[in-house]
Amino acid sequence: MSALSNIIMETLLSWDLVSVVSMLFLVFTESAGDLTKYLKNKSASLGEIVTLVCNNSETNATYIWKKDTVLIFSHSDTLNKSERTFTSDRMSVDPPTKLTIFNVELNDTGSYSCQITDDQSGVRTMEWNLTITNNLTDHAEYNLRRLLLFTIPSAIGGVVLCINICCMVWLCRKRKQEQTSHCEKRKEESNAQSDGHTARREQHQRSQYFERLNSVYGQ
Image (tube, rainbow, N blue to C red; front, side, top):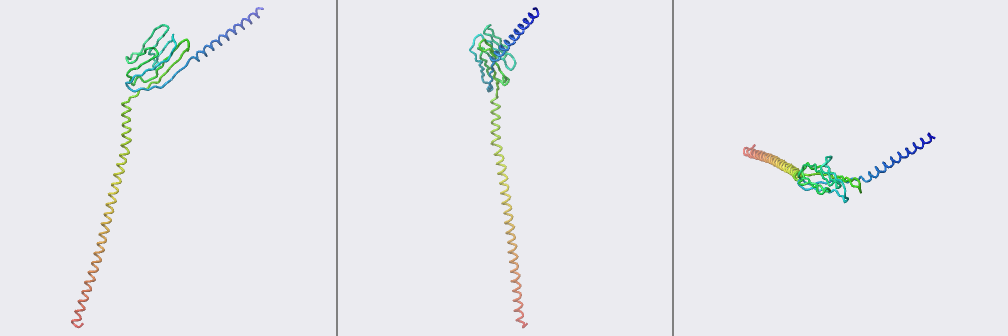
């Protein structure tokens, strides 16, 4: 009889353990279902004002603000207590759902998160990846790119134009030299022809002279 009682007690205990495990699993699943995360990329220019809003309409909530992994602000509606851990006078949280950064600097770049915990929605996390850009640097880089964009083609065009001018000058000089050489050659040929005519004329004159001379002396 005692053995049977022990078996019944062990069975009941095992059922209780299974029930407890099942209840813990359901609680964990429900909590995991309530865990939501909102992620957004946000950018701002140097010196601007950045406002991050952690939307929540429920009361009796707890808010935890972090930059990267560092706690910067916490608030509990239940205890009506807030704790500020940030040291920058450019940053404020008021009300606890709104984080404002004035006159942002480059070192304000990072990941900001707001974790809300309440009885209705459970745990929710909103996260922003904040990027700060320097408009002056970007503007200077843009002007440099534009300058290079217009200067390089102009420089290439100038080089091509100089090459074309040099080629034209060289061709003109070469053509002029060819024309000069051709004229000199024609002049030499003309002089040679003239000299040939002159020599033939002189030879003809000498022949006529000797013929007349021979006719005078009867030869």
